[in-house]
Length: 177
Length: 177
Image (cartoon, rainbow over all chains, first blue to last red; front, top):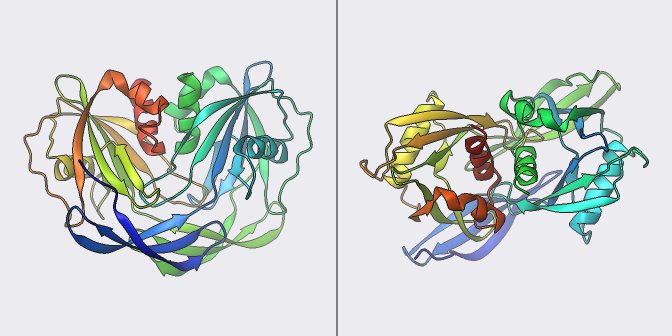
């Protein structure tokens, strides 16, 4: 039976805008070796499947530097220090889209990538989502709010309109409810 | 209609073991501002849902430094330079688990995280997977090969035994076939 390795020490190599790059000195006692491993420390994230009373999904279209392209994603963002994930989800949905919901449900959580990232992404369902709140974007956030029929989402994943693994994971939880 | 931003210049800040950290100078012409954005450049990845003739999924249990814990994942890894994703999937499955398949199928691909990562993860289905190959682990790769009934996977995602977003995305594609 495989066992956890032991972290002997960690060293912060670099602090980026959204992550810390930390090198870890680890021991694998089972096989008796030491090695250095890279990790990236992020805040936890939230992702929201927000559905309007007429069964439209509220999506965000924006430019993403990672892929140097526009993406269509469910709203989401980072959990602030000391903030509960559900509170972060409510805040992010309203700030990013202006939408609010009176019917929230936990969908589940994932590790975005346990191989080198420490954080979790918590997924929520927001039913009866309506534009009753106040959109409040960061100065450099530029996005379009779009609505797609919930029934079209499986096809949007198949035809690569939706390509973000965390968004696909959110919809997986939604469809497995 | 929202438009792509323009990358004016890029600067490599740091080269980690599995990524390059690159800072980009970008212009949003629509809103007329410039800014610096962080990106992480990775190789593309592959992920394999390998199913044995008796409907067991071949999984890998290993220590992951990101979450400092053991995980249960489908086999996967990085695509080598110049390698086709399907060739990488066949190679990774055999190297990591010793399994081979004579019936490969593309499931789809995702962006692990377009917000700051450039790469894609290609998902494959390997039917009739049998241990006819040669396992060939890296010197510091320590893992257990485990088999789970395919029918138990939805419950394993629900109870958080499977938590990796890319593995969940792979199974989403498998179930949407």
